[in-house]
Length: 131
Image (cartoon, rainbow, N blue to C red; front, side):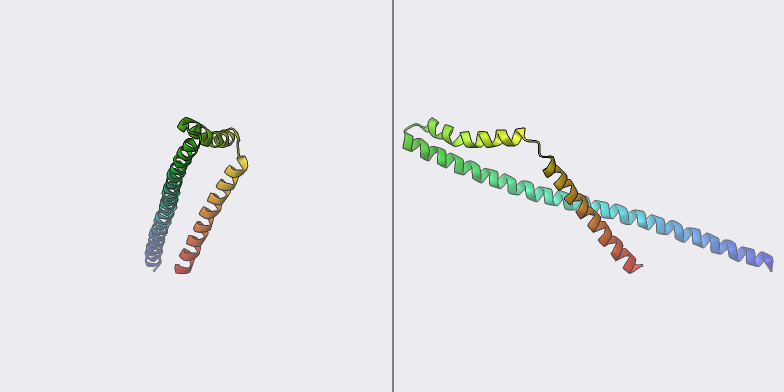
């Protein structure tokens, strides 16, 4: 009888190890899928934002050209029109280039981390409800 109990215990231990191994593998897969989902979401949002900024920049460029030609026609000097339109953009660009905004960077990083943690917690809730 002890031999039979020992065999049963060994089978139970082997099955337990197999189940544990499968569980760890599935958790690793879930983690990698969650990371892949987060990265793809960030990439999609980045592409969307980049496209929006590019279109806005193009629109601003056309408006600036139109305004420069209009002012140039009014002053009878196209180059003066372009100079007048470009001065405010140059000043704003220079100020933004020289200014180091750590507050903006910290705010952006905090939002990104908060969104990522929220999605991980949401995924953990889903997996705990399933299992």
